[in-house]
Amino acid sequence: MTTSRPRPPVPYDFLPPVPSFPVSSTDIADGQVLPQAHVEDDDGSVSPQLSWSGAPAGTRSYAVTCFDPDAPTGSGFWHWVLFDIPADVTELPTGAGSGDFLGLPVGAKHGRNDYDEQGFGGAAPPPGHGPHRYIFAVHALDVPTLGPDAGAPPAYVGFNMYGHTLGRGLLTATYENKG
Image (cartoon, one colour):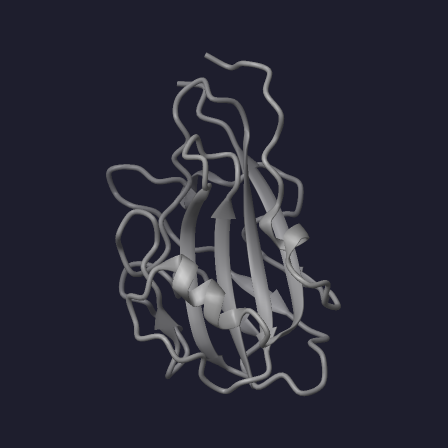
């Protein structure tokens, strides 16, 4: 049952401001509905293609995250945590974060998402909960490697990004389970 409630804030609004840079996708469009391929179902889901450019000078690696601030948890829901992406990489192909991880850059590490898996987990809001926002963020970092091991939880990866983030690009899609 959809109820009128305030929307939770975007977590990046509470971090030190950093320059933004463009993030785009051939699979999803900013402000539009997330395609079914990126929604969790019995067959899993596929991570979207992402491209970025214009990161600040001094960028030595990237991290990519997907966060749903509207999840009814009190703390949102992390769908994807990928870090230690080399600085010369400016695109992830469709599926790099799911399935066989084809196209995942050498050296990149998946943290654990809130499905308790390493990789991308698609949208799965509760039926009738209303539209949820899925914030895909590319974080430009001033270190070549972040420090956590693969499988680290999202909060720990985020804690390690704090103070190392030079810039951030966002792309937000929505999805509602009208089920």
